[in-house]
Image (cartoon, rainbow, N blue to C red; front, side, top):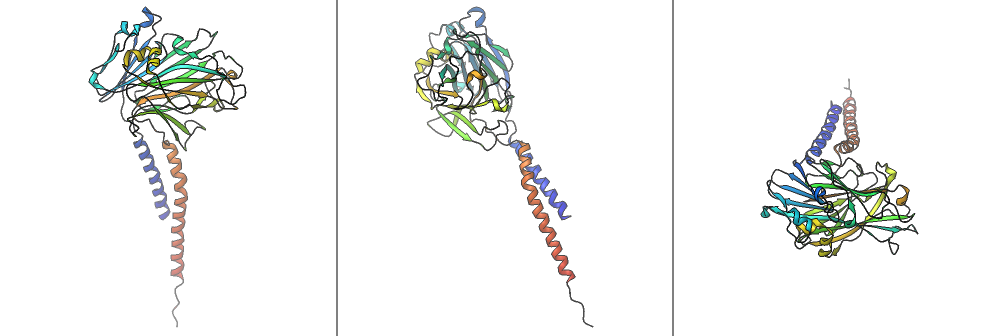
Length: 395
């Protein structure tokens, strides 16, 4: 009876832990997703496309705007209204003369806005295999000068690919994904996303390298009116369940005057992949530089979306470099992919899956149950021994 109770207690503990984990990770809500692609490619091929993704929640709306007019840009706008709209004056937007060609209505509903601009692709000849770009940098590829194909929609994803005039083949592509519910990316690194985030996967496919030992860096600008993404926090984890061998997460965050309240973020794991369908051995580490303030006028000139929406933008920039010393060079596979999550509010935090929690509970619970059962058994044996040792009566 005692042993059965102990086992029942252990199973009860495992069940409770499972329920708590599932409850804590329950979805906060869902969003209704709709997409609108402005038909720039039909009338003005040089203008670039503009995609508007509207994600309506219970009491707010997220507007994702993805644009290839100039350098590829993702603009995220958060409003406190379920009826807010983005209005575009297309002739003014294409002209790129003044700000205000893209705005939110009602203006009073605007809570937060932030943009990420993919500005340049840099390449260097790592002749000494140090993975340290110094004076061996080639002239950079300025992404605002790329020829971008029309955005290819496959809801809830959008694909944008472009080439430089010097490319004989190959392309640089960005794939935007938006989400109506919480989950994880299907491909490595399986980033955890919420309904308040979007995902951008960037890849180089077949781009001709200018040296046999070439490595690449990607330059990005974070843009905002008052509080652009400013600092990168790196968090350590003890779990690599979803991204084997990777125990860190980098978070480029925006906060008010350095407070702990996060307004928005860009999040990634420090890993890229050298194959389109990678195995574990195709993973390659990546690093980021320290964000530095940049000229708002410079990034405005490079991006039509920044010009159209922001009147006085503030900008921070960093580089993400791919590969470490001793890692294979780009020419080995001529492919490189990296994934970024962009959202509002606090970044999603990885936690152990219910299966892992159950395994841990069983692994820790069984020894405790064995000790408990053994203790009860010893008590029973001692009790029986004491009762059988009573004195015989004297005749």
